[in-house]
Image (cartoon, rainbow, N blue to C red; front, side):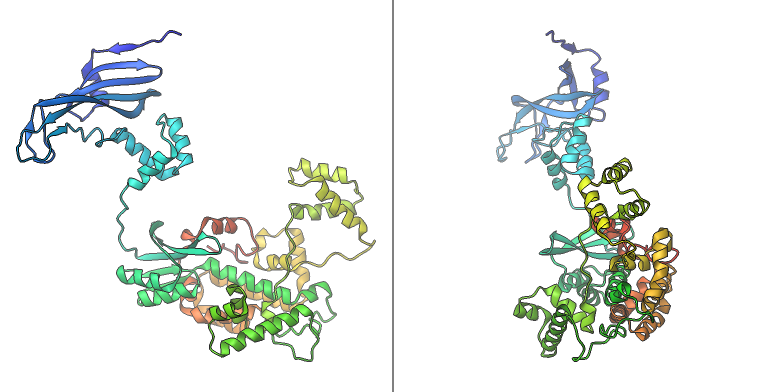
Length: 532
């Protein structure tokens, strides 16, 4: 195969202006194009150089060597500079350096293999995409830098200087999920990460705020440690509770309340009230003489045990160690005013077929009982289901007795109907929501309280929050009443979050952001606006 080598020794001024624009101490000697790479041979034009130690000028050449510098690509070809570097002898008798090399600081750093302008380009790629993704982009641009090269460029950059933000966002993130957590501090106004604290406890946050005075507003979730740290470190700052966490907490409270009334959903009584045996109409504990199931008995005994140990002065962590329980379990019992508030619905494992079950049931009721045909219809609609999923569900429908009443709604379904925005409900959801008051009038009150809270949140009517809390407290709904009364512990921050436009939504983790946009049951309030 023939190799074409092009050597150009003319028009040196053209290459000087093209490659070394603004660098006056270099001369181009030759340009070579070979195998898709352009090489430029250059050398210094000065008579000598200054010693970097003593500053004395020297023109005595000791020897020469070549540096190979990779530069930005030229016309989709690789570009390399072969730089001839002279080493001079320092003539000063008192200078510890005997020889030194001439430096071209505007072209490249000492010992560097990339030019300064290529280094800047790699820094931008590394900051934008980091490792492997940045390496793929660098290969497409002709830079030819690996992922570790990009990461080294990023790590070599100095830490950006920052001023104390006026509006500070505080949030936790997992170093190792379930075990190690840290705290990230951001500037809410310009969405900039300010600092990272090693833990999510009150002490480090308070110390950071003391070292950085000037924070006026602190946006946080409702974690007690962050509230205490902000109170100790910046007592004059206004604390703002995050609206998403408020709505998320309301959704959990509604789910607890619906779970407490699930007997009404399954077997509605003529009066629409719960059977007397459940003891959950008023949200108060049952009498000892009332019959309860095994699970309820365990919940009742565990709740009594935790509160007895708390009354003796033991901390929640000490109780967890003593009983061998998880800390979250102890906290759930400790924060529950009544043992019924700890009851949660056992959710079945979600299936990819769940969104298509109503369609299969309608087709089955219409007379189409062929599993093959139904599966083909779903596959034609790009449904991610298998033949076995469809066959199993159709077998369940075939085993149901003729004329059987429709299945009652699950706790998760009713919670979604109550907490989701009405515009996001389909016809079946709206029909199910209309049937809820007939099954259980207590849940109709829950829906009313949720709508009122949604209006407070979206219209920034934080001043009306105490009235809402009093109304919920008077209704004595399990779960929801506890949520409302718990707001009183952090009333100022909650009121500020429901009044001001500031929120910590911009600093939430990506997983939380993805849950907000995935259409979960607690993702948007049941009013005219979104939670943000």
